Amino acid sequence: MNIHGTEYVIRKPGNLTDQMIDRRIERVNNCIASEFGVNSECIYFDEESGIKISKYIPDSKTLAAAGPLALQSLKAVSSLLKKIHGSPKHFPNQFDWLSELAKYEAIVTQINGELFFDYASLKEQLLRFMEVNVKHVISVPCHNDTVPENFLVDGNGSVYLIDWEYSGMNDPAFDIAAYIIESRLTAEAIDQLFEAYYGNTFTQDDLMKVKCYMMAQDLLWTVWALLRHYTGDDYLDYCSLRYNRLRRNIQVLSMQPDYPIADMVMR
Image 1 (cartoon, rainbow, N blue to C red):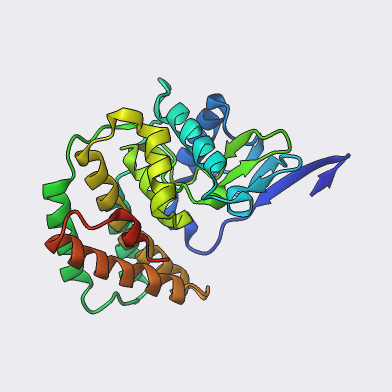
Image 2 (cartoon, one colour; image 1 turned 180 degrees about the vertical axis):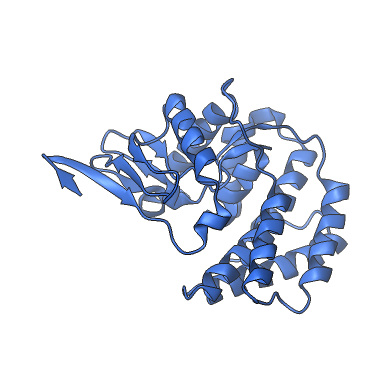
């Protein structure tokens, strides 16, 4: 949208998002993210409808287009995430993936939808694995949806992170896990991301946390995709991909915890 020579981007939420997203929290967190200096400028936000208008970032493209596996992209993502995760300014809400999952499950039941036949047992297997392997959890400001499409690079090389719908306090490994699995990083790219973000502080516990959060996200976004499917959107293939990947990874990791993280991505 162009108004008096200035370009704007309008976000109109999809079906059921009013039940999935707290727009009041999103508006607050969107402002805080702008204080971080990493967000596009928002000029209008309606909490009731979820409609948001932001200034268009000139000459920008997503990291999905720029190349999410490129070393320059990995360093930019690491630098930006460290800035967010290290901020003393906190979000007012906690992002708990299990609470989000329970909310999505309830909506599936509400609309008379169905989950996969082995959903309950697979979920229980994942939770048992995470109970043993997720250690030293911390709580910092997180985006929680670090897909490469949410990172923008402008003509000057500055990097932005947009769409703060799922933002909240969480463990930083959740953001790292999301970028790895959503960008389908190779083994080399994963090593480069870990080096850029963790440096020489990276531990085996950090690695296991990332692996666990990769699987947790596959479960969470599987149910999210089912909801989109039941409301008429074409998300069934996406849903199937994530659920089958989770099924494979939890089975393998339960027997072989040192299974390579790059093999979990399943490109």
